[in-house]
Length: 233
Ligand code: CA
Figure 1 (cartoon, rainbow, N blue to C red):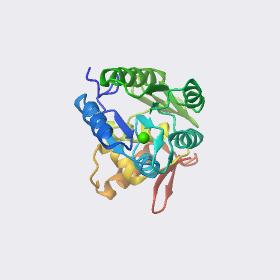
Figure 2 (cartoon, rainbow, N blue to C red; figure 1 turned 180 degrees about the vertical axis):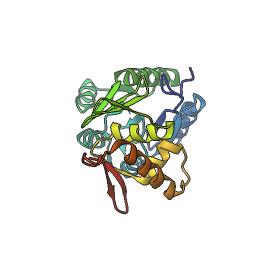
Figure 3 (cartoon, helix red, strand yellow; figure 1 turned 60 degrees about the horizontal axis):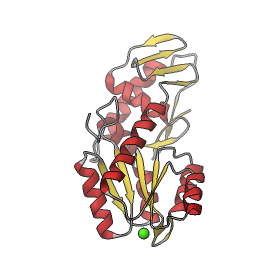
């Protein structure tokens, strides 16, 4: 298995690196990219917030001393807003109090600067692996059941036949129940591309999925949020 793929899948693992030191940021981006991770690198709290809104990252490498704020405040906000992917703190502050504070706020690991790239890569690998196995195998929502291991979908116990794209689309919603998902984010997950997928295509898939899952007597599973995207309700 390549480092950069999620265990059990071929989907690339996306890592957000938040680090304001230019040389270190470049070094991290290069080191992680060479291990086949998909890396975005930003240098401020504001840019990190934007990046996390736009893309679903699988892991964040977070520096604490940033030009426009403290990484710990970012982390606190993310966890409060339900971001639950692993966060690895990278900091020159190596006092025990800072470590404890970071871990208390929901960081998964803490690496003091200076560090070796090998150690960082080992920590990243272990976090990705741990998180993948901790993920739920069966997702459920209001009579809807999606089994990630068997790749099956049931509505009220009755099997539903979905194409692989329809299945992938449903999985995105099941993993983000109640969240309003922007069209760009959905398209990126389903078609794994950054360029604009023909937006009609997403609507076509949504109506197919609705037709297969929503019978005449049940309330809709999906809500169209005009100008934004869709929400699983
Ligand atoms: Ca810094």
